[in-house]
Image 1 (cartoon, rainbow, N blue to C red):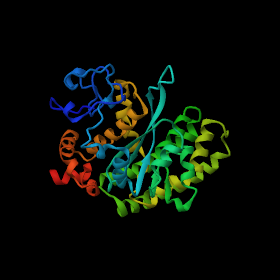
Image 2: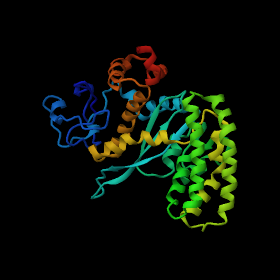
Image 3: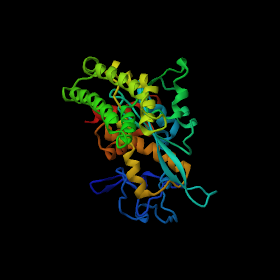
Image 4: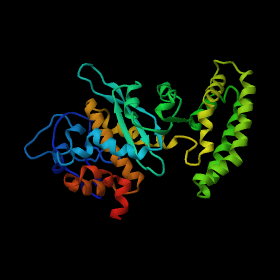
Length: 350
C-alpha cells in the first residue's frame, strides 16, 4: 500500500512482495482510498515484475510485521474500544480461485469512545456470527449496534459482560421508510425522534459530556421517550403487523431497553452513525480498487486501514505516523506498543 503526502510516496523500500490482495488498478492505493496515479513499475523493486497489481503484494517488512499482524495490531488497538464499541459491516468483493466470479467478504468497523479514539476494521470471509464473536471474545462493556440477529447471543449471558446499546438512527430509518404509506402516524413518531436529536444538538452546542449530558437527557429527552413509548403501544394495535409501519413499531418496542439506555449515561451516543461514517472509505475505495485479491488481502487491508483511520480520528498525518513508527518499531519494546498508537503518539510528537 502506498501513502501519498505532498507529492511524496511511501514506496518499495518499506515493503517486500508476496501474496495477492486488493486490486489496485490503475495505480496503487493512497490512504484516502483513491488511486495514487502512478504505475506499479514505479515502486517495484529493481528487476522485479508483477502481473497483478494487488495491494497485498505490499506486505510489510519483517521490521514492522509485529505492528501489522492481526493478533498484535488488534490486541493493542482493542484496548481502545473499552468501555464502548460500535460494530457494523459492509460487503466487499473478493477473488476466489475456486469460483468463476468474485464472492462477498465483509469489513466490520469497531469504533471506540471519546476516551479510546480508535477505529479498528476486521475482515471476515462471511457475515456469520463467528466473525464478530471471535473479535469481541475478550471485550467487556457497552456494545452499540443495530439489531442484527448476529449480536443477539452476545447479550443473553450476563457473565459475558456485554451491555447492548441501541441505535436511534436505525430505528428512525424504519419509520422513515413507512412514512409515505402512513404519513400521520409515522410523521408523529419522526417528530418525537427529531426532538431527541434536538436535545443532542443542544448538548453538543454547549460542549456537555458525561454527567452534564446525562442530566440534560433526563430533563429534556426522557419525558419524550416516555411519550413516544406510550404512543407506539397505542398505534401498535392500529397498524398491520407485516406492514412497514407495523414492522417499524415492532422493531422499536422490541429493542426499547437498548434504545433508551443512552439516556442514563452521558458517555453513550444516541446512535452509531460514527461507525457508519467510518465505512465510507471502503464504500469509496471499492470503486477504485474494485476487489480484494484474497482473504489474506482483506485482512491486510483491514489492519492498514485501521491505522490510517485511527490517525485521521486523532487528527494526525498518517504519513508522518507511519514514517516515524515504521522507522523505530523494530527496536521498540513489545510490551509498550500502546505508546505508538495514533492517539497516544500524537501528544508526544506534536
